[in-house]
Length: 54
Image (cartoon, rainbow, N blue to C red; front, side):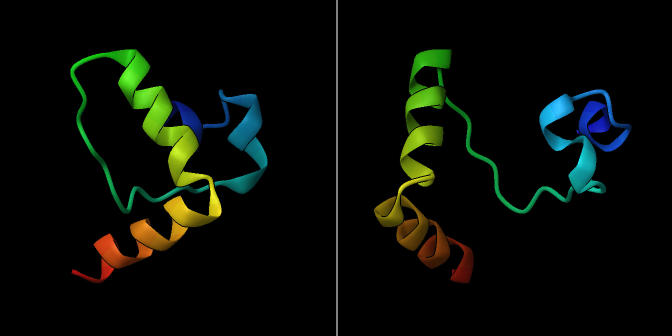
């Protein structure tokens, strides 16, 4: 998060400051990337909104 908020990550440099609102832990990078892609889909966004309401 510190790299993102200090502007060292090009993709998020113009959207600072960022605030972490949700995090999940995974055993491997593959599963983490798979879930990141899923949460960017319409269905994933609906499920994430439900999780954030809890």
